[in-house]
Structures are given as structure tokens and as C-alpha cells.
Length: 472
Image (cartoon, rainbow, N blue to C red; front, top):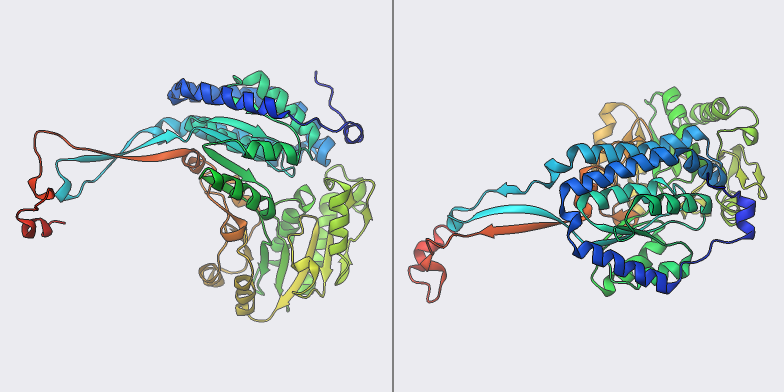
């Protein structure tokens, strides 16, 4: 059994950075393994995915304990939001991969006959996957499914801010995969800098828009393609005709998962003035129903990742009127679920992603006010709307976001048939399900032309060009 370290122990003994020479040697191993073409074999990929799933099931208890140590997640939340999502993704790829990988025949225009066209899917090569700390297992391992499925080799970089989970994942990876197929490095910014200095064929990054800019700049040096899964201020809009009971329950749930440290968390609430008081009161009631009257003692309520994050969120809570929650314990990294009323757009809490269990509330009288506000700001990663069907299409057509839900929150991320990703400052590129396979693949177009006939019209001096124009 692995001895999992508590957060207090980990604070005293910081995780060691992987040395630069080790990063370089691992990179060489990955490139050599990829050059042997083993990963081109579909059965090899499926076999690796099956090994991957078996490893997760073997390490499930250790992963759960590590998530508890890092973020105070309950076993139930750890399974639902991290472990089960990766297992389902693996199962989906195992079942669909052979179909996805089949070359696709395409139609050929008349003037190119008798040529034929097809699309083949080949791996991009050696991929770098950098994960954040908020869902440290899910957001490192889910992209890895796509890397393996597509035939790539992968270099993994967990977040140092979730050290217990990072250490368990490293052991699991080293035990499960050939080091030339999947490598892993640990550490902070200096390790990220060393990794980004390498020439990867693809980079998959999940994190903040600020660090996303750093990643994109580094990728540009080698013209490396990227997927950036970032974040932003995802609005939650409640119309006057919404089912207030359901809205309150689903908003309370979506906002308190992982103590609000979720890139698709409802970042702020925009509610019709006529139902605001009722909705806010019911959200508070639903929070108490889920976590009990003394939320700090709840086994199910997570903690903020570190004291620095607590201090940042606390500063955002200084404007507006706190009408629910507000309790903070810096030493224990605890912030109670908090609702803040009388919020103005120019307050600091409306200027940056909260990434915590704090819900600022603004009201509207006409839905066009909401549409104008959302469109005047950066494009969000998620978008949540509660209301009758009549208003749904209007607001969806007149706004944009990476994804979202109607009359719910968060759950679009759990459907691997829905591509997940951002737009604008909330990210670029998509993954989950088939989109993960495609994200790590080069979609290669091949035109095959026989030699038994040759079109004379395409060559200079272009005789009978007038005839060719009729078909081109």
C-alpha cells in the first residue's frame, strides 16, 4: 500500500521538481517509442486502454484518499466528478475506436475522376498534457484517453498544488505504461518552462487564460498545435417563468461542487427581479439541505486548494451585501457557500473568475439586458439558462459560449457525445468522446489517381481550355 501524505506533511516537504536532464531523456524515450510505430496498431491502443481502466480500478481507493487529502472531496464526489468520468471515457473509446479509425471515403468531383479521395486519421505524435489542480485526476487522465486512442505518446504534467493526487497518478502511470509510451514529470513553473521548451507535436493544456497565453506563446515557437481548455465567468440566468424549486436546487449543486473550484461553475447569477428573493432564499435552503446546518462539519463539502486562494476569494467578497454564508477559516482552507446581493458590474467580483463557492447576484427586467451584458464581456466557457422553452432559442441564438445547459448546470461535461471546450478567451479546441480522438489526430487527406488515363487539359499550354472551364 502507498502511504498517502496529508496536506500538512506535503507543505513541509515540497514535491521535488523533475530535473531538466530527466525531462530531456524522457522526451527521447517517447520519440523513440513513437518512431517504432507500435501505437499505429489499433489493437495495441485498445489493449493499452484496457490496461488503463484496470489500473484505475486497482488504484481507486488511493485516488479517492489523495483527492480527500488535497481538496477534502468525499468518496462520492471523487467518484462522480473524477473517476467515473475517466472510466466512462475509456469504455466509450474501447467500443468506438475501430469505427473512428477506419479511413473515410469521400466523393470526388467530376473533373478529378477517375481519382478517388479518402481521409485517414493518424496520430499527431508526442503530446504534452498539462493539468490543473481543481480536478487533478479527471483533467489529466481524460485527455490521456484521447492520446492513447489516437495513437500518440504522451508526456503528463500534473499540478503541484494537488500533490497527493499527483504522486498517486505518477505511481499508477509508471506501473501501467511503458515509459516510452506515457511519461510523467512533477513540479512547478520551472518544470512547465522546461517542458514547453521541448518540441512537442501537440500540446493539451487545461488552466487559466493567463497561463494559456504562456503555453500558446511557447507552442508558437515550433508552430505546435494546441488545445486550450481555459475558463471565464460563466453566467447563470433565471427567467421569471423558470421552475424556481428546480433552479434553486440545481444552481446550489452546481455552485458547491468542489467548493466552486470548477471552470464551468455558475460564476454569477442573473435573475429576473420578480423572482430574485424567492430564488435566493431557496438556493440557501438547498445548500443547507445538502450539507447540513453547520457546513464546515460536513463530510461532503470540499476545501479551497490553498491559503493563497482563500485570501484571493476573500478580497472578492468585500463588495455587495452577503445574504447567505460568508464564513471563512483561512487555516483550514474553508469558505462557506456564500451568496452576495446588491452586486454591480464594476465590482471586483465581477471582473475575474471567482473559482470558489461565492455566488454574486444581479437582477434584470428584460432579457435583452442580460444578452447585452453577456455579449459585452469575454466569451464564457459555460452558459446556464433556466426558463420556459419559448425564451431558450432566443438567448442561445443571441449569445455564445463554449457549451452549457438549459434548466441545469454542469452536466453537459458528463456527456461524452457532446464536444467540450471553450471559445475566445475561454479556450480553443474540443475533446471528449470522438472529439478527443480527433483532437490528438492528424486528419490526413489523400487523393489517389490511376495512371491508365491522364487528363491532357490540365497541362500548359492548356489546349481546349474552354472545354475544361465547363467542368471546373
